[in-house]
Image (tube, rainbow, N blue to C red; front, side, top):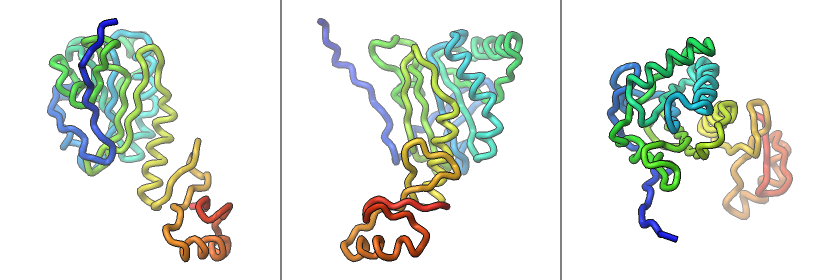
Length: 219
């Protein structure tokens, strides 16, 4: 079997997201345009593909929810602005759904390569289903990759954004499948004295202390 030495550069969590300047269906956009807001940047393999169409409609239906959380959406594929415009109009015509967010034209694949959206074995000129959560300071906080054959869950992205914002606001972690209203995880103590205090005083402070390292609370 022929081996490939091609490597894919991926951005790293908790570091500044790669800068970009790009043409979109809403005019030129740069990463700096989103300073002070959360940004979900997501790629799709190609316009006029059925799975991507369902995803775009899912993002559109949740657009107001993302906006209420101070979050903007920005799509991307290797297709041209004209293909994007035709696809958006087709979605409106056939499904009755308006696409309210911009879509990047990335014909030279500059943004796709900077964000590691092009993977060997997928296609030379198609971006995989990559999703990036960038915080108001331009820091990359989460990355989610899906194969071309399977659509993303937009509900999960809403939940993940809620979890990230909750962790930032309250200095806590969130357990598996956490949703707003559920208890959060209190960071474990880092000294023997703090561990003992957590066990003895935590319940008095309204915490649910299973053990010194595993504590939940309501917020």
